[in-house]
Figure 1 (cartoon, one colour):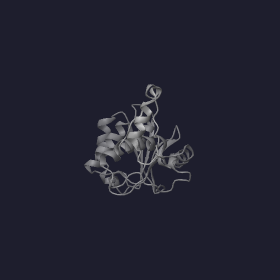
Figure 2 (cartoon, helix red, strand yellow):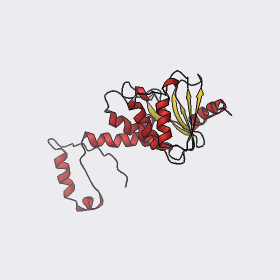
Figure 3 (spheres, rainbow, N blue to C red):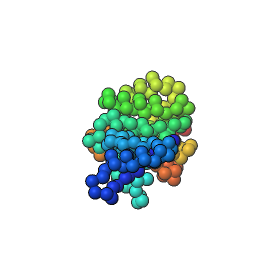
Figure 4 (tube, rainbow, N blue to C red):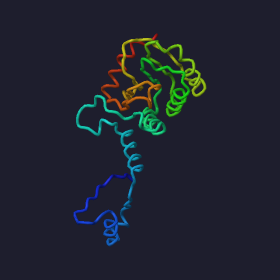
Length: 216
């Protein structure tokens, strides 16, 4: 059963939500067919987070998304992880994953822990992961590669050094789906950052740019 947010505004002086519920009780058929609940800000936040994960923050606007923030230092780290993992789960079923991020690698424990959760959110169908970075954080890749070896020892891991990309994407090239992230993992929670779904067109275009860089 899907849920929606309904706004109730009183036109009668002095009436509020209590009076609204009293009025609904006068009509038993309403309570038989509908559940009406009063939600606090925490509930609304959960609903909004689920909507953003499902539809992308750009769906809240009629114009093209450029740099709208989803995560920022004011959001608790647990909430940030829920948002990110929700987006990553949209890639469930990916077999060949492209992780495109100039400065992806980090040996910070919190980054490695989040990376482990992100990989765990993907299905067991995962066969290969290719990292596209600029090579400047290559000295820190051991921790993340070790995490991959432990979580998914069957997955073939490859590295491609390139300056072709300046943004950060996780791409399922076969299905033309992906997500875009406004910061590397070590920047999450420290700065304003975008997380959103890519359109099929954009995901396909990025995959086509990345594919020729793969080593034979």
